[in-house]
Image (cartoon, rainbow over all chains, first blue to last red; front, side, top):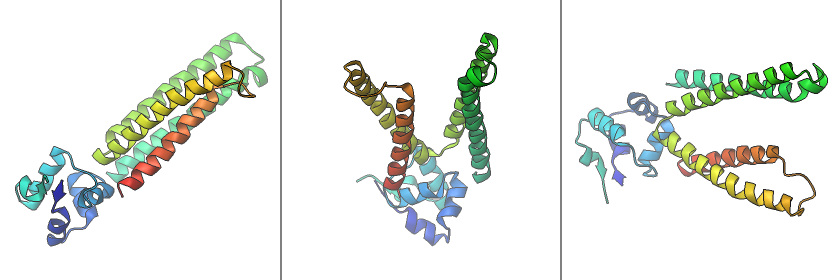
Length: 63
Length: 130
């Protein structure tokens, strides 16, 4: 699964630690998601969509 | 989140150390402290068992506090450790039954093997997702 998490996070001026804190996961998890080594759960994806104010399908794309 | 994690890790560490301590007392106490008294021996074993259960609960508490990636890493590691423990444990047992190893296949070897495979698996899996 591809995602735009890194771009969206940096556009918001947030660090991985900031995003991790907001979502309630570890910084390593955010890093693994950004590197597309790990697909997040649905609740985490929804939380990201809320933070970035975008629909999930604009953040994550199934390829 | 970090504070909560530290609290849970500390709790697990305390129960683990006290479990090891009560295990040592239950193992060596009958010989070196109370001269094989059956009541004290049974009591020491029961205290060790209760301590072990509390250690497991503390471990479960920590596991439930993990995030999704950490849970995945630890679950994969547990699957590998459990599988290897069953397969290698039974192989070890057969080797002992057939007198193909020069020592007794003690349960302690299996416990050490599980601990080491779990640590190595967690280390490898953590690196995989870095």
